[in-house]
Image (cartoon, rainbow, N blue to C red):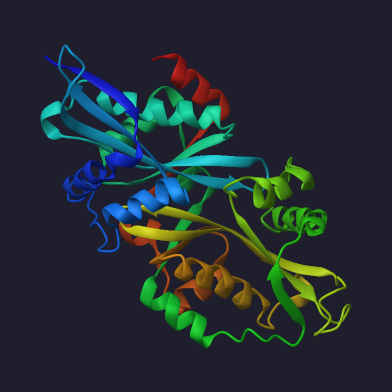
Length: 346
């Protein structure tokens, strides 16, 4: 039996990656979105990176590639409590090459790279019908089903609903100005993150500091996330762009990619209780969606706790889909210690 080599995908591999994505889509019960082309994959992995991929290749004794038999695709996520994390979005091995440990090697390659990038955890999203993948996740306690344990629910808004939503939102809000976060804002943003933790009854709250938040948003060659804030214009004046008012809300979002196309993942959306019901939250959400559409996104995704009944009613009223409820998607999480143990088993 020929040897199998796992390596990180390079710029010239995007055609082979696209072929594998198309081959895997029926198995994963997904469709490759028409917007996913070889050029889009190249741009999204090298010019403006939003995903990473590994390939499994069957090679002969001389090291020449005989066939590409599997792939793994991942992207960054962000924890506003702890920092950069990763998400394994797809893993696939051709049927004739299964039961050889190739999927485990691809998964370990993703986790190893995540550790090298100082990711604090690795997540994956698996539909409940994929019992083999779920069994692998739960084996030896390596991952936690946080959908089941903590009540997180994955929501999605498709492209048509995204466009309808932003057309319906009033962006010129009388009480607040929506703008990109500046370096000096992140101390106040961190305070709002803590307020959100308190609202969600998560007592541990953020351990990250404002300096690191600013670095991940502004200083890296390829920023991990974008942050926009809502500023109380009563404190600075609606047309005064030189002074700063009190921040009363924020959103943090991340560009991602999968078989189903480019997307914008909204990590946080929060408005101070005293400033709610006046359009600020919708304006922040619309800003994340507009940014995503500008960059070619065909969906917006986010998660919320199942206890957030008013939020869930609102999301559904805007045409969003509860992917956990309707498609059985569960969110699994591998924490840092388990990531290290998993890689060391290779």
